[in-house]
Length: 150
Image (cartoon, rainbow, N blue to C red):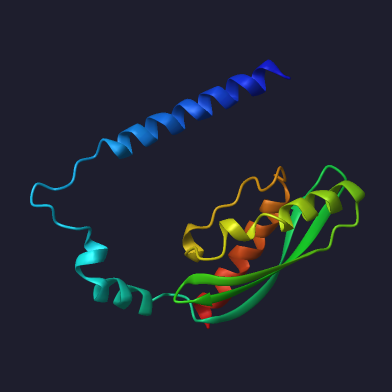
């Protein structure tokens, strides 16, 4: 195995470990007040109602450049109050390696998309695919623009 990859993996694990320790060391407020989302759920619901995106189903083609050529994917997202409630993916790659990477992407991207706020989605690598997420993010930006104008 490549020593650089091992080193990078160790660094990433160390960063995650530090983050977990910091999160676990945070103390509850002295008066044991629950988090704001538990105090005033109506405020959270009101914010959700005022989403800058219209509810609905949106479709867009995303592009990215692979080593072979420019490839496309077709993304459909269903939004409710700015949150993705469903998604479909259609790979449109013509190059064999790109087809394989789009298949890997399609098998794992929903976990990182469905149930998330559209503004918080930032895919970089999904199931080993690092270029297909760029196409997804391209399509996502187009969908955000359309949903904001609806």
